[in-house]
Length: 330
Image 1: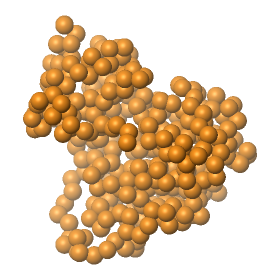
Image 2: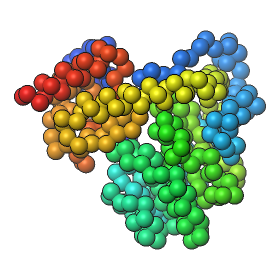
Image 3: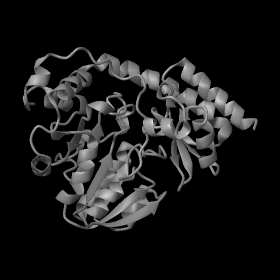
């Protein structure tokens, strides 16, 4: 099983620091999550039903009814390659590691294109292209027009464009979930998640956008009652809360700018609304330095670099600032 951020209990054990004393910046999850209200008691007693309003709320939020609710986008990541014909796949790397692993396990031939442009991926002449937008972990972002043009070019050769938009909610203008599986982009497949922007990773709710026949096969593969009733109720309300979404985009933009400024003395990086990517030759040393002070960030030792999520309150901001200053003066 691959390693991911958020393994706070393991870090507490490894570094000998109590769980409550950590600042967890390792996941890129919004630290100010959508405020979950008390849930109706029936959520816990009844099996999920598809006509409870979730699909309607999601269609309204994403602008596309061609969707399937899944138990976190991770479920779709693992199942999707097995539901598509085996073919060559150009994968723009570095990328969320679960994607290439799933495609290789399903028997597809993966072409890893390190740091490649979308045009280079198209020139590789593989039937399919796989990418994250914004990318995880490097925060690189493609424009909506670039993605739609790529989908058109791939469609001409019978190929598919797969886009993971797990971090896309803060910048919806560059997202393409609204056209996935439609007449305008029948070969476009998009994955979305409520875990990052909404801060509801524990609810395990995501969506797959694609042509109806693929959605039907995905539903059959995952099986009935894939998303729990409590999770469906929370997701329905969160997707409908436009005031919170608008305010949160403003809050995240300000926090992202603050984080970028704080990390600027450590080197030139890149960021989006939910995390900042810092290429760093001393990534392992800096990761350990921060961990010794109860600050957990995501280490990518092979690239190398660190991904910093957003602190959740002023105390956490000050702890991170103090640790960075100490690192600079060592």
